[in-house]
Image: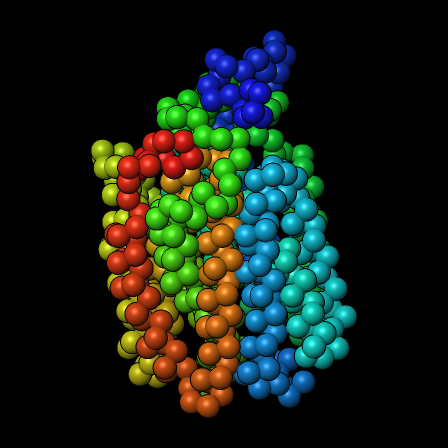
Length: 446
């Protein structure tokens, strides 16, 4: 470590960590990636528990869609604020401690939701849950920047982000089963909340930075350090001020493209059960199809990550490879337009599935962009800033969904969502590219 507190950039610049009897793990970075995937699965099971139970809770407490929107907004409000604060905190505390704190917090809050008594207590517990869950994506993005080179980051981000789809797909069957097994909704929150503590044990036993990990091989360590983002570019300050980061157009490219596309995902994650019920389908009868958009999102993560990595292997620049995914996959979200007029369940599920696949392919890219564009010490901060802005946009979208669906239907919402990919393509084309500051310190050349 140098006088400004930075880790060395190459294996040659650090003391050797190997010893004659040290046992190493092959491809350790992918074990780390698997842990990040598992954290996102747990995160989304805790988050989706309320959404799956929404039809039962609405009937029990006589809530309107606008009432339910208040609960969702409570989560989004803290999630928006803490995305930025949590991202900065992860950059300061480090990935290991930052994610440990976040998972412990939101697991406790998920369990405490079982004590909720009405609308306002649900709002309070969801607010506290959002405060903990907000650090998951900035923290995971930072871990990818620490452990993976550019040619593998798309797949690594796809791996951890696919956990949201898997968690969303597992939650309906698990939560509905728990509801019927116990005859009440309270044990569902209590039991799903314990999953985070199981993950935390594995995380603390496994995760260290590559430079400090006792089980990493010398060859893998050398590869990671030699190809880490910005290793061959000018060294940035030890901690880049936020005021500097917000002056880069690339920062706003990351922020805006996420803010434009993410509300679509939260529409599916928070409202899909209520949407199907509004179309006259019983929730129990739609469980087979309910998980299809989430599985398609899982596939989309790997389509976006894998296709962009393939383009990089073929000699494309990182920037061109990432931007191409928005052009190729983004238009699938236009299937929200025919979904407005579809009455057959299987066709409706297929349209949502393909649209969600297109979204998830783009999501993998905009989650990867902070680690592509910025030196690792600023990755979580930029990711958190994007999450904060997106959170406030999503709050507005959630309120709008509740108000519009109470007065009209989901049709105007789906039609509005179909405009998102067009705007995203424009933003990423204009803002996510090299400028005269690229390759000079904190901002990397793509």
